[in-house]
Image: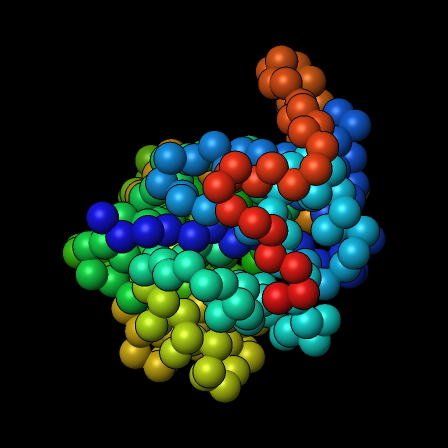
Length: 270
């Protein structure tokens, strides 16, 4: 079985929510929630937080996380993930980019993305059913259309696929899929992706995955029920914290020191 690396890119700068990774949920920084949830996933053999900020690095160390200090000039989280892969002496066949702003990402979602790569796709990701007309027409919600074998045909902020003749039921068609932003890559595909120049469709939609599609990389889309709980704004932070409080979820316990995965030394200055 191939070995799988999980990388959590965590950048301090955010236009919509300043210092987002350090914002607190039930007294614990957001990035720590993601770290704690991710390192308990059976599908991942090792988890590293990739950041260019010493404050984020220190917080992750205090909760026992493994940290890679990366260059500050990366244009995307994908590039930051690739720097971590290059810095490690250990070999992995599959790499997962875990979004640092989804504190409750489901293990099954990450496993489904990894399964797409194991099934032969260059890249694996996930999607779930669009829940409403409002969501379908919201440009902040990325939609994806896939072939019958699971291959991604296109990603868009626009409402796709367009139904010319409404069915009159008022229910969203099952072909309407919302992208869930977790990515698994074969190492070769990840290297090819980061070496590509931004593409015309990527510039149009501001969606990095279109660069990969335009270059001919195959992206497998697994269907999941998990809708993800992203934190992009202060309002999201309040909503997610209230959800955590009412659900009775326990906050991650501070471990102290770098005890990540118990069997690996931290990566510093990667």
